[in-house]
Image (cartoon, rainbow, N blue to C red; front, side, top):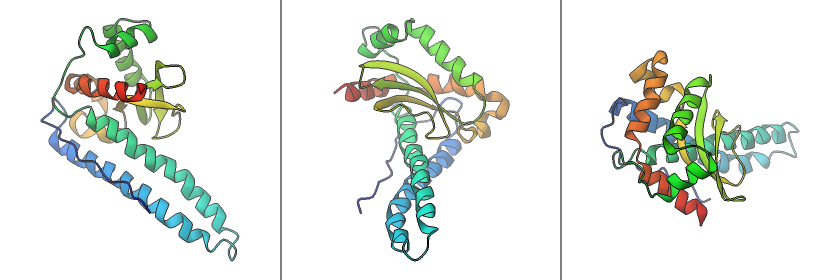
Length: 203
């Protein structure tokens, strides 16, 4: 079986988000990778007992459902951590991504960022605020992903993902500091990484 491999990220010192939080957060990411591999490995093994035990197919069915959570947890975090590599970089005035954001979101770039931040701060619960590239229509979309997988947009590539699970910020900001975490995430964001993801998604 071909296994997923955890990626290594070169994340510098960040504004507001501590090295300890990143360290613990990366442990969770590695857990998603390991769990996704484990499900792929174990599900076929359990199926051999299906003829002897009528409950086995239900059990393996639940494993398959769980796989979407673990797999998307892995991929979402890869988008998140990658965007923090290399230090903060702004999006140039002539950037194709900036122009696409302003066209598809019908806002100036600064207005888009402000609305994105506000939406992330306003939604209660756990999940992700995400910017997607829709491969079908060739445009950008914004949505909320509940947990790791509910609300993913089919055939869309996540090019920017803001992790809003409490584990991503509560140790540094406390629950009441969610808005400051969002501000600091954008202060640390490497927009050149986001733009490269946008370019890859368009190919």
